[in-house]
Image (cartoon, rainbow, N blue to C red):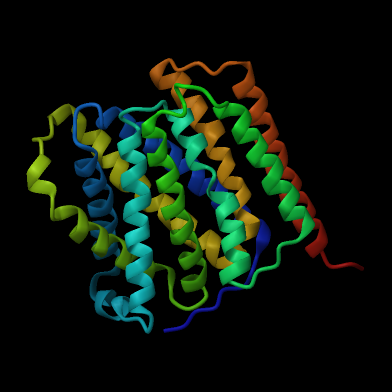
Length: 292
Protein backbone atom coordinates (compact mmCIF):
# COMPACT_ATOMS: atom_id res chain seq x y z
CA UNK A 1 0.00 0.00 0.00
CA UNK A 2 1.35 3.41 -0.93
CA UNK A 3 0.38 6.61 0.80
CA UNK A 4 1.61 10.02 -0.19
CA UNK A 5 0.59 12.71 2.27
CA UNK A 6 0.38 16.38 1.34
CA UNK A 7 3.54 18.14 2.43
CA UNK A 8 2.95 20.74 5.14
CA UNK A 9 6.15 22.18 6.70
CA UNK A 10 4.36 24.17 9.43
CA UNK A 11 2.35 21.13 10.51
CA UNK A 12 5.50 19.02 10.40
CA UNK A 13 7.28 21.39 12.79
CA UNK A 14 4.30 21.50 15.17
CA UNK A 15 4.12 17.71 15.21
CA UNK A 16 7.86 17.46 15.85
CA UNK A 17 7.56 19.83 18.83
CA UNK A 18 4.68 17.75 20.18
CA UNK A 19 6.75 14.59 19.74
CA UNK A 20 9.79 16.03 21.50
CA UNK A 21 7.71 17.34 24.41
CA UNK A 22 6.00 13.97 24.82
CA UNK A 23 9.30 12.10 24.54
CA UNK A 24 10.81 14.38 27.20
CA UNK A 25 8.07 13.47 29.68
CA UNK A 26 8.63 9.79 28.90
CA UNK A 27 12.40 10.18 29.38
CA UNK A 28 11.93 11.96 32.71
CA UNK A 29 9.69 9.11 33.86
CA UNK A 30 12.15 6.50 32.60
CA UNK A 31 14.96 8.16 34.55
CA UNK A 32 13.07 7.44 37.78
CA UNK A 33 12.42 3.83 36.76
CA UNK A 34 15.98 2.93 35.70
CA UNK A 35 17.17 3.69 39.21
CA UNK A 36 15.33 0.57 40.44
CA UNK A 37 14.82 -1.52 37.29
CA UNK A 38 17.10 -2.64 34.47
CA UNK A 39 16.96 -0.27 31.48
CA UNK A 40 16.17 -3.26 29.26
CA UNK A 41 13.02 -3.94 31.27
CA UNK A 42 11.87 -0.33 30.87
CA UNK A 43 12.61 -0.47 27.13
CA UNK A 44 10.56 -3.67 26.86
CA UNK A 45 7.57 -1.96 28.49
CA UNK A 46 7.97 0.95 26.07
CA UNK A 47 7.67 -1.31 23.01
CA UNK A 48 5.06 -3.61 24.54
CA UNK A 49 2.84 -0.56 25.07
CA UNK A 50 3.25 0.45 21.43
CA UNK A 51 2.51 -3.04 20.14
CA UNK A 52 -0.48 -3.53 22.47
CA UNK A 53 -2.03 -0.20 21.48
CA UNK A 54 -1.58 -1.03 17.80
CA UNK A 55 -3.30 -4.40 18.34
CA UNK A 56 -6.26 -2.81 20.11
CA UNK A 57 -6.78 0.02 17.61
CA UNK A 58 -6.16 -1.94 14.41
CA UNK A 59 -8.08 -5.06 15.48
CA UNK A 60 -9.26 -6.90 12.35
CA UNK A 61 -7.25 -4.60 10.10
CA UNK A 62 -4.02 -5.93 11.62
CA UNK A 63 -3.03 -8.36 8.80
CA UNK A 64 -3.65 -5.78 6.10
CA UNK A 65 -1.73 -3.10 7.98
CA UNK A 66 1.25 -5.39 8.53
CA UNK A 67 1.61 -6.05 4.80
CA UNK A 68 4.20 -3.90 3.08
CA UNK A 69 6.34 -3.92 -0.02
CA UNK A 70 9.31 -2.75 2.06
CA UNK A 71 9.80 -5.26 4.92
CA UNK A 72 13.58 -4.81 4.96
CA UNK A 73 13.30 -1.06 5.46
CA UNK A 74 10.75 -1.50 8.25
CA UNK A 75 12.95 -4.08 9.98
CA UNK A 76 16.02 -1.85 9.81
CA UNK A 77 14.06 1.17 10.98
CA UNK A 78 12.72 -0.81 13.94
CA UNK A 79 16.22 -1.97 14.91
CA UNK A 80 17.42 1.64 14.83
CA UNK A 81 14.48 2.59 17.05
CA UNK A 82 15.36 -0.10 19.60
CA UNK A 83 18.97 1.10 19.63
CA UNK A 84 18.02 4.76 20.04
CA UNK A 85 15.74 4.10 23.02
CA UNK A 86 17.95 1.43 24.58
CA UNK A 87 21.17 3.48 24.56
CA UNK A 88 19.32 6.56 25.83
CA UNK A 89 17.61 4.81 28.74
CA UNK A 90 20.86 3.11 29.73
CA UNK A 91 22.67 6.46 29.82
CA UNK A 92 20.02 7.87 32.19
CA UNK A 93 21.48 5.68 34.95
CA UNK A 94 24.79 7.53 34.81
CA UNK A 95 24.28 11.04 33.37
CA UNK A 96 21.91 13.90 34.19
CA UNK A 97 18.73 14.24 32.16
CA UNK A 98 19.67 17.57 30.54
CA UNK A 99 23.24 16.45 29.75
CA UNK A 100 22.06 13.16 28.23
CA UNK A 101 19.52 14.96 26.07
CA UNK A 102 22.06 17.58 24.98
CA UNK A 103 24.58 14.98 23.82
CA UNK A 104 21.85 12.97 22.13
CA UNK A 105 20.64 16.05 20.32
CA UNK A 106 23.60 16.00 17.97
CA UNK A 107 21.21 14.00 15.76
CA UNK A 108 19.79 16.99 13.78
CA UNK A 109 23.22 17.60 12.23
CA UNK A 110 23.44 13.96 11.22
CA UNK A 111 19.84 13.93 9.96
CA UNK A 112 20.33 17.03 7.81
CA UNK A 113 23.47 15.61 6.24
CA UNK A 114 21.89 12.18 5.82
CA UNK A 115 18.76 13.63 4.23
CA UNK A 116 20.89 15.45 1.67
CA UNK A 117 22.98 12.34 0.94
CA UNK A 118 20.31 9.63 0.94
CA UNK A 119 16.93 11.32 0.45
CA UNK A 120 17.91 13.98 -2.06
CA UNK A 121 16.66 16.84 0.11
CA UNK A 122 18.13 20.24 -0.51
CA UNK A 123 20.58 21.69 1.99
CA UNK A 124 19.84 25.41 1.74
CA UNK A 125 21.63 28.18 3.64
CA UNK A 126 18.74 28.76 6.08
CA UNK A 127 18.82 25.15 7.22
CA UNK A 128 22.60 25.14 7.51
CA UNK A 129 22.49 28.32 9.63
CA UNK A 130 19.71 26.92 11.84
CA UNK A 131 21.55 23.65 12.41
CA UNK A 132 24.86 25.37 13.14
CA UNK A 133 23.34 27.84 15.61
CA UNK A 134 21.34 25.15 17.38
CA UNK A 135 24.41 22.94 17.64
CA UNK A 136 26.29 25.89 19.12
CA UNK A 137 23.58 26.20 21.74
CA UNK A 138 23.90 22.51 22.56
CA UNK A 139 27.68 22.84 22.93
CA UNK A 140 27.18 25.81 25.28
CA UNK A 141 25.09 23.55 27.50
CA UNK A 142 27.35 20.48 27.49
CA UNK A 143 30.63 22.46 27.82
CA UNK A 144 33.55 20.00 27.59
CA UNK A 145 34.39 18.83 31.08
CA UNK A 146 35.17 15.72 33.06
CA UNK A 147 31.57 15.18 34.19
CA UNK A 148 29.92 15.44 30.79
CA UNK A 149 32.56 13.66 28.73
CA UNK A 150 32.74 10.55 30.88
CA UNK A 151 32.88 7.12 29.23
CA UNK A 152 29.09 6.95 29.64
CA UNK A 153 28.73 9.96 27.33
CA UNK A 154 29.21 7.65 24.35
CA UNK A 155 25.79 6.09 25.04
CA UNK A 156 23.63 9.13 24.15
CA UNK A 157 25.84 9.69 21.10
CA UNK A 158 25.18 6.10 19.97
CA UNK A 159 21.51 6.85 20.61
CA UNK A 160 21.81 9.87 18.32
CA UNK A 161 23.31 7.72 15.56
CA UNK A 162 20.48 5.21 15.84
CA UNK A 163 17.90 7.99 15.97
CA UNK A 164 19.34 9.40 12.76
CA UNK A 165 18.93 6.09 10.96
CA UNK A 166 15.41 5.79 12.34
CA UNK A 167 14.51 9.32 11.26
CA UNK A 168 15.78 8.92 7.69
CA UNK A 169 13.97 5.62 7.21
CA UNK A 170 10.82 7.05 8.81
CA UNK A 171 10.87 9.86 6.27
CA UNK A 172 11.42 7.44 3.38
CA UNK A 173 8.70 5.04 4.54
CA UNK A 174 6.31 7.88 5.34
CA UNK A 175 6.03 8.52 1.60
CA UNK A 176 5.32 4.85 0.88
CA UNK A 177 3.29 3.22 3.66
CA UNK A 178 0.57 4.26 6.15
CA UNK A 179 1.69 5.54 9.55
CA UNK A 180 0.25 2.53 11.39
CA UNK A 181 2.34 0.14 9.32
CA UNK A 182 5.48 1.71 10.76
CA UNK A 183 3.94 1.75 14.25
CA UNK A 184 3.02 -1.93 14.05
CA UNK A 185 6.39 -3.04 12.70
CA UNK A 186 8.24 -0.93 15.28
CA UNK A 187 6.24 -2.33 18.18
CA UNK A 188 6.44 -5.95 16.98
CA UNK A 189 10.19 -5.95 16.27
CA UNK A 190 10.86 -4.01 19.48
CA UNK A 191 8.96 -6.50 21.64
CA UNK A 192 10.65 -9.49 20.01
CA UNK A 193 14.19 -8.07 20.33
CA UNK A 194 13.81 -6.82 23.91
CA UNK A 195 12.03 -10.01 25.05
CA UNK A 196 15.02 -12.23 24.28
CA UNK A 197 17.24 -11.10 27.20
CA UNK A 198 14.34 -10.07 29.45
CA UNK A 199 14.45 -13.15 31.77
CA UNK A 200 18.06 -12.28 32.65
CA UNK A 201 17.19 -9.04 34.43
CA UNK A 202 13.43 -9.02 35.02
CA UNK A 203 12.45 -7.54 38.38
CA UNK A 204 8.89 -7.83 39.72
CA UNK A 205 7.19 -4.46 39.33
CA UNK A 206 6.10 -2.80 42.54
CA UNK A 207 2.46 -1.74 42.62
CA UNK A 208 3.45 1.90 43.20
CA UNK A 209 5.57 1.87 40.01
CA UNK A 210 2.86 0.53 37.70
CA UNK A 211 1.56 4.03 36.81
CA UNK A 212 5.08 5.08 35.82
CA UNK A 213 5.48 2.07 33.53
CA UNK A 214 2.07 2.86 32.06
CA UNK A 215 3.19 6.43 31.36
CA UNK A 216 6.31 5.17 29.55
CA UNK A 217 4.30 2.78 27.38
CA UNK A 218 1.53 5.22 26.46
CA UNK A 219 3.59 8.39 25.98
CA UNK A 220 6.23 6.53 23.98
CA UNK A 221 3.54 5.36 21.56
CA UNK A 222 1.87 8.76 21.26
CA UNK A 223 5.23 10.48 20.72
CA UNK A 224 6.14 7.95 18.03
CA UNK A 225 2.88 8.71 16.20
CA UNK A 226 3.69 12.43 16.27
CA UNK A 227 7.22 11.71 15.04
CA UNK A 228 6.19 9.50 12.12
CA UNK A 229 3.53 11.97 11.03
CA UNK A 230 6.01 14.85 11.24
CA UNK A 231 8.53 13.12 8.98
CA UNK A 232 5.70 12.18 6.61
CA UNK A 233 4.48 15.73 5.97
CA UNK A 234 7.78 17.65 6.11
CA UNK A 235 11.36 17.13 5.02
CA UNK A 236 13.64 15.56 7.62
CA UNK A 237 16.23 18.33 7.36
CA UNK A 238 13.54 20.96 8.04
CA UNK A 239 12.07 19.48 11.23
CA UNK A 240 15.37 18.11 12.57
CA UNK A 241 16.53 21.39 14.24
CA UNK A 242 13.49 21.36 16.51
CA UNK A 243 14.83 18.24 18.20
CA UNK A 244 17.07 20.65 20.10
CA UNK A 245 14.03 21.86 22.04
CA UNK A 246 14.29 18.57 23.91
CA UNK A 247 17.22 20.08 25.82
CA UNK A 248 14.95 22.83 27.11
CA UNK A 249 12.24 20.39 28.13
CA UNK A 250 14.75 18.04 29.77
CA UNK A 251 16.19 20.92 31.78
CA UNK A 252 12.74 21.86 33.05
CA UNK A 253 11.94 18.29 34.13
CA UNK A 254 15.37 17.98 35.71
CA UNK A 255 14.66 21.00 37.90
CA UNK A 256 11.12 20.05 38.82
CA UNK A 257 11.61 16.33 39.39
CA UNK A 258 15.27 15.77 40.27
CA UNK A 259 16.44 19.12 41.64
CA UNK A 260 19.01 19.37 38.80
CA UNK A 261 19.28 23.14 38.48
CA UNK A 262 20.83 24.54 35.29
CA UNK A 263 23.56 27.13 35.50
CA UNK A 264 23.73 30.37 33.54
CA UNK A 265 25.40 28.79 30.51
CA UNK A 266 22.63 26.20 30.25
CA UNK A 267 20.04 28.98 30.14
CA UNK A 268 22.02 30.82 27.45
CA UNK A 269 22.36 27.65 25.38
CA UNK A 270 18.65 26.92 25.68
CA UNK A 271 17.78 30.43 24.45
CA UNK A 272 20.12 29.99 21.48
CA UNK A 273 18.47 26.67 20.60
CA UNK A 274 14.94 28.06 20.76
CA UNK A 275 15.98 31.10 18.70
CA UNK A 276 17.53 28.91 16.01
CA UNK A 277 14.44 26.74 15.76
CA UNK A 278 12.12 29.73 15.49
CA UNK A 279 14.35 31.26 12.81
CA UNK A 280 14.22 28.14 10.63
CA UNK A 281 10.46 27.76 11.05
CA UNK A 282 9.78 31.43 10.27
CA UNK A 283 12.01 31.52 7.20
CA UNK A 284 10.76 28.23 5.74
CA UNK A 285 7.07 29.05 6.22
CA UNK A 286 7.61 32.56 4.80
CA UNK A 287 9.25 31.19 1.67
CA UNK A 288 6.37 28.74 1.08
CA UNK A 289 3.58 31.31 1.46
CA UNK A 290 1.84 31.95 -1.87
CA UNK A 291 2.47 35.43 -3.19
CA UNK A 292 -0.56 37.50 -4.25
